[in-house]
Length: 107
Picture 1 (spheres, rainbow, N blue to C red):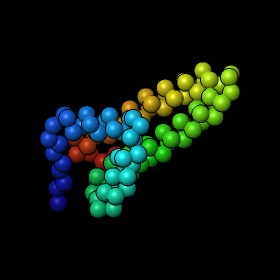
Picture 2: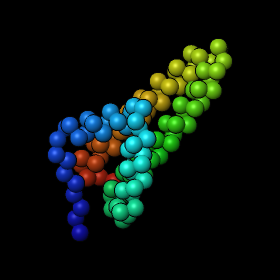
Picture 3: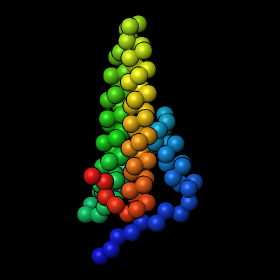
C-alpha cells in the first residue's frame, strides 16, 4: 500500500514552524503525543517521534542554559546555549517539514 501526504499551503507549514519554536511549543508536543498512536506502521509515526524527541532535547538544553544563567560568569554561556538550542530546533523542524513534504520517514 502506498502512503502519501499532501500539504495544502505554505501557511500551514509556517504556522506549525512558528508554534513549534516559540513559547507555545508544548501545543505541538501534545498533538504529536495524541496523533502518534494512530500512525503506527506508517512513515508519519517517525515524524511524530522526531518532533517529540526534538521538544524534549530542546527543553533539556534550555534548562542547562538556565542553570548557567544563574551565575554571572555563565550568562554568556547561557545565551550561547539558548541560541544553539534554538537553531538546532529550527533545523530539526525544517528537516522534518522537508522530509514530510517528500513523504519520507525520519531517521
